[in-house]
Image (cartoon, rainbow, N blue to C red):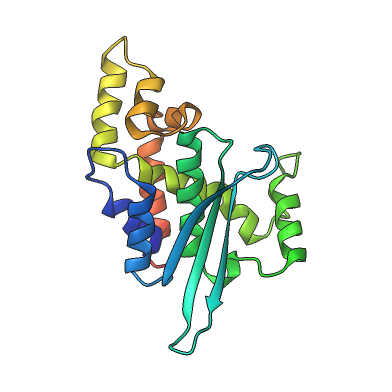
Length: 197
């Protein structure tokens, strides 16, 4: 129950969830000994973020280390979403990870596949989009989201931008949170993760 635990952990927050809090929780649960989050300079169209892991060998014992990289040219709300999505990948099973340059290139090609045909995609590529929505569920605590949802649908002057600002997420993703289907989708994400390690 990995991602489901994170979603539930932050579900009662009444302020924007901090990326560092998500990171610290993943470390506390033992998925890594150390997670470093750092920015890099690239064209946003090419790469928004990535995650690499390695073992730091030392005489006093080895440490599982992770580096989450995000593109600092992105807006801050999108940086937050990208970082949490990459943090989710820290908890991925081996089947959802790539471990060579060749596998990484294949993953990138599958993610960028232009025709929208998902039939030939391997597990890592399929879970890239899904991880974005899992990250969104973490960054939009459910109790607070429900309040904003009600206000959005009852008050004529409410806007998606207000919801995006409240959660500090991109407006294009905030629209999902006021969709009638969001609650069912979130519930499915929680069920999908119930039996994961």
